[in-house]
Length: 203
Image 1 (cartoon, rainbow, N blue to C red):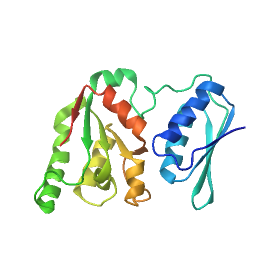
Image 2: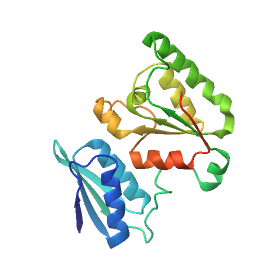
Image 3: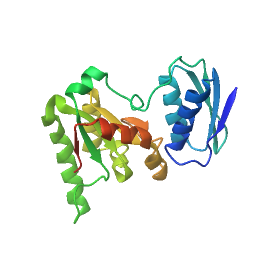
Image 4: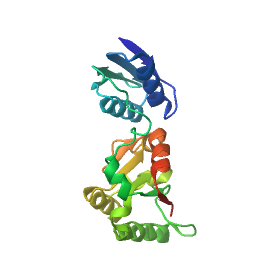
């Protein structure tokens, strides 16, 4: 069984090393060692999309073991890596919204929080062109904090909008377990999403 020790590697290196190992060696069994829950989620998601049956264990407080068994004949390409919609769907839904803070604008945080609520509530006006929302840095708090913003994000996700939430950011703010909406993701997925989008809106 192929073993990759990715402990200590910053996002998205564990996923990239896993991808490289699959492309170069095509192992039927793979064990990836990481040191945080976000990395284990990112690697396990990538392996599942590449045709592996995946299990995760945590034998130590700072060690996660991601095991993949029975990989597919073709390894997922970077273009396929982000979660999302079929090719035909992305033809018509190209607008990506990149949110990097939980308030909108500078000056007063209370006002900024209200403005963010209004901004998110206005996104459905984009119609079917709204494809994906990416939450980075302080923006991940919107996916974990009870309130109007979280409710709106849940409604958008239910309507078919893809929501990606930065796993490294969730770890930094100790919010990984508190996340209530969206898919925990890595920077490789974020970069690929930005390259696929026809338009990027950054409030």
